[in-house]
Length: 92
Image (cartoon, rainbow, N blue to C red; front, side, top):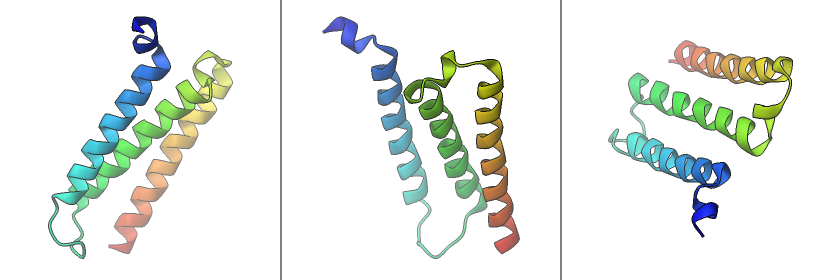
């Protein structure tokens, strides 16, 4: 049982669950659903980017992949985060 709890996938899953709860609590405490709050939006998108990177590294086994694949997936996450932030602030 102890080896199961020390497994990197179990630890990553627990971290992803905790981060999801933090993201939900952050978005929930903003008050009205129709009020846009840039700080909360940036925080939730940043949390989503970190979660995406963790899923790519641990559940898609990219952490053991060649360097070019690690760079490509990290670049994709950064580009997507930047695109979503850009679309959010242009639409505000």
